Amino acid sequence: MLLFYLSLIETEEDKSKFERLYNEYKKLMKYIAKDMLRDEYLAEDAVHEAFIKLTRYINGVDESDSHKTKAFIVIIIKSVCLDMIRKDKHDKAFGLDEIDNMGYASNDSFRNVELQAVYEAIESLSDKYREIIELKVYHNLSDKEISDVLCITNATVRKRLQRARAILRKKLAERGEDYVSV
Image (cartoon, rainbow, N blue to C red; front, side, top):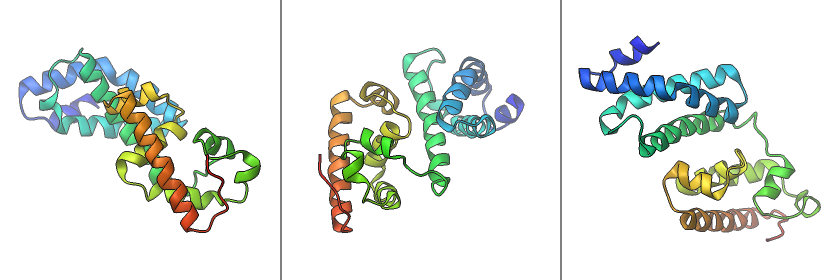
């Protein structure tokens, strides 16, 4: 598979850099993808897609062993996985426990809200808010982990979560859903 990726890269220097990245991060990428997708074969597809994306951005990578490079690789693989999850949205329904993690309301007061309405409201968010909610809900990442993945501060993560929740509350209220605010 490495030869395929290398064929997508023009310069020998970039090919060498990519080969180092491939050898250093392929196991980490597979681990993250398996954790997020919970499926061996989907994880392999995600890693493959992530490496193809990495070939497009290889000249933006400075060193193969830097913290910044690792964060960039993690962002790529998580982004690919999130895209796969979004594409499979009809098969993925939110459980009430996951919704509670978002800080909405207790199970009893939230049972009247249709889960599909919540999902549609999340899907209608702008990318920066939808990503934050998905990382928090789908993957149970801490604010610190989200800040590392997205390369933003913890304060920005908290503020975006707060704004995303407020937008969701408003969207659900506009739909006439029986919603209890936090």
